[in-house]
Image (tube, rainbow, N blue to C red):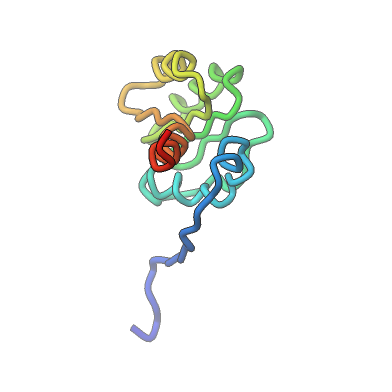
Length: 125
């Protein structure tokens, strides 16, 4: 025990983020750990919005510019081991179009649809 553990630990603070900040990508740095945890908490974490419109880490990918869906899906397929692809869009049709291009076994998750929908529901809308 005195020599420590091989594993690392990280602590997070759970905060409330406004729907406006989330929908305009102003809260991404605070949401980034949740995406990493959703993908299995393994490997590298994407902490910033990618300048080129997409990024791929150890077990997940993030697509913020739907015009870059082709290179993103190719990178996901090439890397292998990707479990989740987070796709930032408010357009269900475009989300489905990108999700169909992903390799089998990759779970497509639309950001930030569930967060914003839950907020609307709790506000009685």
